[in-house]
Length: 505
Ligand code: RAM
Image 1 (cartoon, protein in one colour):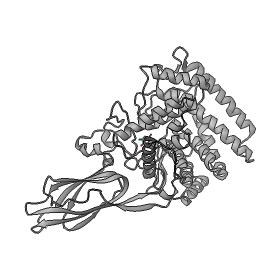
Image 2: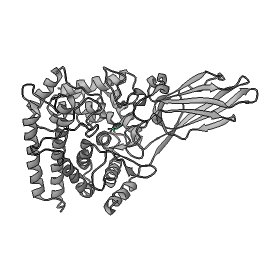
Image 3: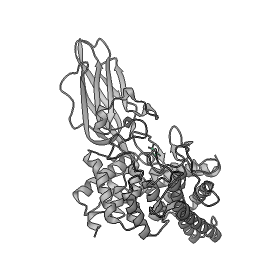
Image 4: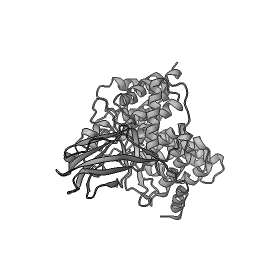
């Protein structure tokens, strides 16, 4: 690691957040009945929490003549209570499934479970006691943990009841993902991903305003960039800070926009000057993905560019749009740095970015746009997708008027590849907003995120497809996360973008 990167990590460590711990107990108390083989109890904590759980157990009857063998299962959403992990065959580790099989050799005992869980429900099942004694659960409690400071939460007036509920659930989602860094999900993967961070940061500006946590995460990404200075898609903080060996075209580029939004919110020029070169480098690296006509080269390598968890999605046109969007952000950053007299950038650099972005826009219009359909198409099979078109609108490849036509054409396109994550739905709502389609944006936000609430969500999910409640890119919804950072943006959309019923006219 170069000295500069080490320095970035040291700066990040100065902004380690202070954790807030609060002890909570289930709403339904403990059962009065002593438990035998096959009995089970579900504890409902009444809301989604992240923390460490403690169970106090004892026995009644004759002396405990055999271990008490129990299974403890932690569920973020009620539906997980009925999911059976024994036949899980998905492609990501089953280690994420929140359940434990425990022997208590001697009762009474206090079981302090070592893992940190994300849950609303805790189910305890008695697998075995003995004919001579029964198990008693004397108490259950959790030390919950977050770095979000409730007393710093900005209030928001004038919301309808539905909007208030969406706002609350979004904030709860953000809060429970705010740990040592902005985690993507406290159940899974419990790490810092840049695509998630970019949206969490926006929601944070609108609510908790813990901007030092954003700063910490930006420095962590710069400090863990690889030997080529490429920003990795995600990073770990334990046992020590280390970048993951995963790269995605769009995620590396999002370092730029995250830094720009951070600056717009904080005016922290020192951070921009420190991290400018890392941002600029991402654009340089991304340039290599284009052919000589300035068109993105397509790829079938799974995950080369993310955009959404729709496994059938072709990424070519979306990637071209994300590049244009990011280069525009880079030009803004360059102007900011120039105004502050930094030597990191020259007028010529800005001019050459302007020429490059114009070339990429022309190429997108010429090679990736189907005039008859009024839609962007992607890949060899000219796939139409929400992802590519929403990103093309956000990138401003055409003007607002044409962008609105594109989004209208998209609604009518029967074969369009749909969106599966709140992450992509967020970008779709932003695309509608960006070209003046406020009413459609509002309707989409309230029906999509409102749909999760109707489903009983205490926090917003990683994946939600109203057409398919069991949607999962992992081979089974059992490993899906139900408190996922990238779904917390309605609070930003309502508070910062004015996307409320009261603002529609
Ligand atoms: C999911 C992660 C994270 C996201 C990546 C691309 O597996 O949980 O939210 O950024 O996918």
